Length: 188
Image (cartoon, rainbow, N blue to C red; front, side, top):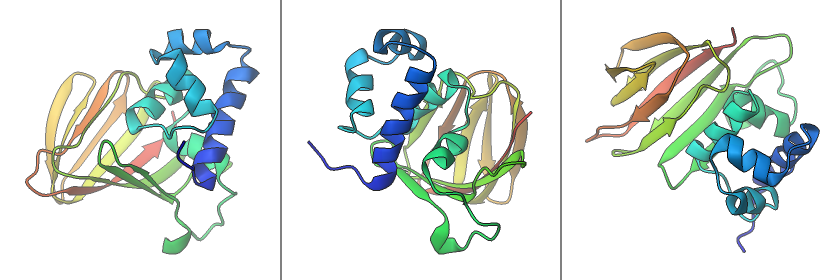
């Protein structure tokens, strides 16, 4: 069994708490999220770290943005987020690196995330964590193909795609270079 870092261990505990708060069994959650019961069990016991896609499904079931869920397991952020204090989460399997530049904060509806995808990385989310979630995606380097609400856009360095998310979404780095982008998320 691999050893999880502190954030992954707290994330495993929080995911278990969310399920228990709703009085759901593992079978109930598996049915709602479309994730196997055994995977959920291993995740909640801290035996595995979630992939971005798996975490996206759980966030949708629990009606939370990924940033909000991760903020629940991190200490309260200060008003000034120094570069060294910005939490970084990696999904090695998909090639997704996520830096929470401005994490969710009580009383604020927006957050800022830096995302990086390696060439060929492809992440799909079946449903938004919160219906009508407003997103602004500004590409700093490279290009990313984004599908949201049934429409696909290739967004290149310097360009910004903005929308409210009601359905499925997908982020794909067509390469040949990695992509680095800023995601601004605003709760409805």
